[in-house]
Image (tube, rainbow, N blue to C red; front, side):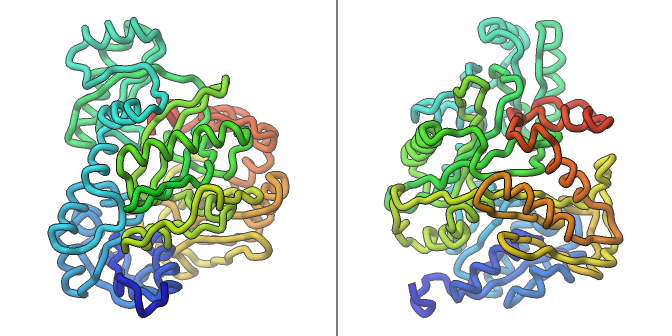
Length: 468
């Protein structure tokens, strides 16, 4: 569509950091003006510098700025925007925020609020996906009302089981239970933790899968009922339920299994009436059986690896779909070429994983064939302690996985971030690990890796990917 005919003339980005910059780059290519919002400590971030306009929406704490819906909506109205892109995190999966946008006649770039709400309730999401024909793990059909009910169900399923918060995410409100004696305490602590984190203490139980792979399918769906998938991402390398490294395609998926998982994800999206970019996440066990885990109704941190192997611009597609355009291509048009790897570079001590905020005194980005870096920092930028510790993503693309690993090593070795500690040394060690190089990974990889390198995991890993 020519620039002059675009429905959206101006978009507010209700986020910060690298994802805000990422959205700005696509908007510039589409001829769409952008409005950045920022807290007072983020005034020097690159997303503020490169947006066409900017508004301070509050002090550093997220509750007073990036989660401050009245301030964000006020900025949107003052700057007369057509739409709001929520990025990921913060308000990206808030059905209430999507409803407020709609009530204010501002397009929310994402799916309908009803779908966000449905997928945000893990119990209802399980039920909906089972009705759509997706395989789900054996578990409770609703919230567990008592220890007796939970014990009866756990005996029927068979131990180990996992207790999970209905409104959960990020590993909170979850406990692995390997015996009857552990169940009562697990139900209580998970419920208490969930209530504190999500203001909803309801929990449910499902069968626990030991050492699965975490495989997710990227989908795109328009408002006319068309939906395709863009293949899978392997997201098994995690620490405390947080992904460290992702790749596409998975080292183990056959074309047949990719087709089966992709078709299952597409069928589910069509059943939901889904329209936007989204991700259907699965657990894959050692026998090749996959199970629905959750659906993320937003763009994800790891979307660049899919973009690299498909040449799709997922943000552009989100915006086009929100403008009411048809998808414009079919599943048979999809080509997956080569292999891509993404490393999340966090401002953390690579030995202890302790946060390392502070002033960046030197900064150099790697270049060369097949290298992409998404970031919002620079030499002289002060990394704040108030937000997520990720300061950059390094993404590489190559013809083969072996060459992609070599390319990532070369890129990480050329990347300079001084003044703070980062996880670059950790990623370099992962690149050299024999199991990683062989593609022999699961959600327990980091336990093995840290033990092999003489380190603890900074606390027991309670749930792996099944808890995310």
